[in-house]
Length: 157
Image (spheres, rainbow, N blue to C red):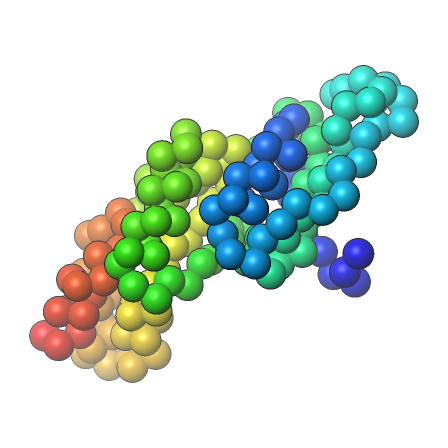
């Protein structure tokens, strides 16, 4: 187990979420699955209690804690993509698996976890600063999924 691990609270589907992430993102895997040794407020003995997994190299633990807490955009995974094809692949996987689109490259998976699918072209535009960054930012503000060609055109003015 890593010294620092992101713990994500799920109602009851931590294992399904971990398996989806492992199938979708490189450098992702499902590790140990731990079952509850006895009944607990949201489950029974033998139910999956925690799942160790990695998402794009980030160690995580999913806990099936029940419906007490909901996810918000205050936590999100940000995935940097190299091109439109990679952006489309991740976006479509998340949204197409019961997720939902949001604005400016954000979407939520079917478990309510927020994702930022962010092309490197957008990151580079922001780093460039000045008028170039403003044009790219203004273009991004009109998008759901990021359109790399539109960001690059905005950078050029």
